Image 1 (cartoon, rainbow over the protein chains, first blue to last red):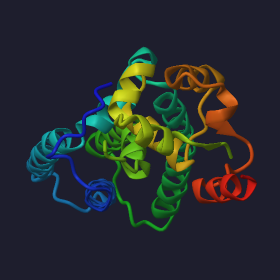
Image 2: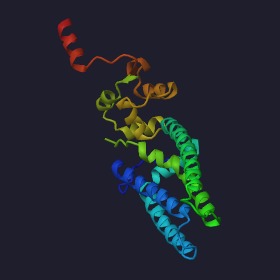
Image 3: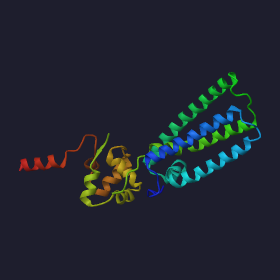
Image 4: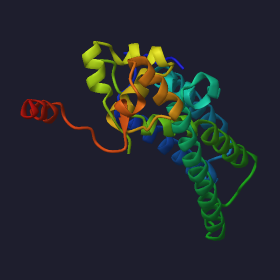
Amino acid sequence: MSSASSTRELGRGSRRAVILFVYGGYAAVACVVASGKLDGSILPSIQAVVAGILAWVGVWILSRMSRHWRWGQAPDAMLDEREVATRYRAYYLAYVLYNSCVFLSLVALSFFIDLKYITSFGYPQVSALLWGVFLVGWTLPSTILAWIDRPIGDD
Amino acid sequence: MIHNRLNVLRAERGISRKDLADAVGVNFQTVGYIERGDYSPSLDLALKIAAHFGLPVEMVFSLKPFETLTSQLMKAKGGG
């Protein structure tokens, strides 16, 4: 993996703020869509707008956090031993976090259905749920690397 | 934790983290992590680093903290 830090790369605090914003956005969209209280006719438009915003944010994040993205996805042979070890730790944390999120979401879903907060659960909700599960699972290891990384400069 | 003298050795030889990293085939940030004590290198990497400086590995890495340069100089002065 390229060792040079991009001058455009975000600092640790900014990276964490972006991560909280994006994953908070995931959670907010999931709550709105899963509630099923939106008018069915405007749901596709809302999904399109949300998809557009997520795509834009995704491109921006890739340009500013690309080192972490590559770090999370690159083959072991492209990394040194510390990077591989750190990534294994990130994979483990991602596995625990992902399972916890899926479990808590299923429990919450059951409660909300029992409490009649969710009145309809059709294709749009299932689609949004599965896309969310996929996107979180795909991006979580790189996100954790971006969260925990403390870069050291060359002197 | 594994203690090391990488900072001192690099300063003495006038080489940057990147130079050392390129010589032993790692990311320069990994050298920084080792110096800071945040990462303990594998035996393979420790031997490569020691070989790069032309020193036995125990003179570069140790399980006990190394004596500071000041205390070494004071000892040398006291001894003779």
